[in-house]
Length: 148
Image (cartoon, rainbow, N blue to C red):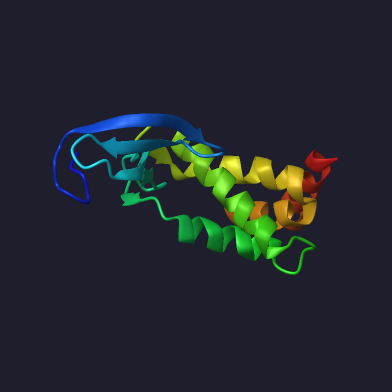
């Protein structure tokens, strides 16, 4: 690491702390040559998550695609945009925290369903009807009975 002021590489760490709520380390540094103080932040750069589709095809995980599906399920429900964004971020964090570089789309759907069930039953049924490809009213009715 080089000093942003004098470009020397004699840097010492004065203070180190974790940033609350994130996997980030904040370091307060000082150049031993010129005395310039500055702050750096370090965060883990996770490898890209790959989704394995039902047909075996692979694609890079898309948070936008996840959010889009969740927004459709929560449309016209009493959930604010902020809550929806937090909900989506929580699912994304859950997926990435598993440590695997690949995940099946079915597993993502199962996680979303479980979390929607806790958040809003109507949104759960909407998502389930598409995700589980209900063919008849009976299959919809059975899913409704499983909620209660």
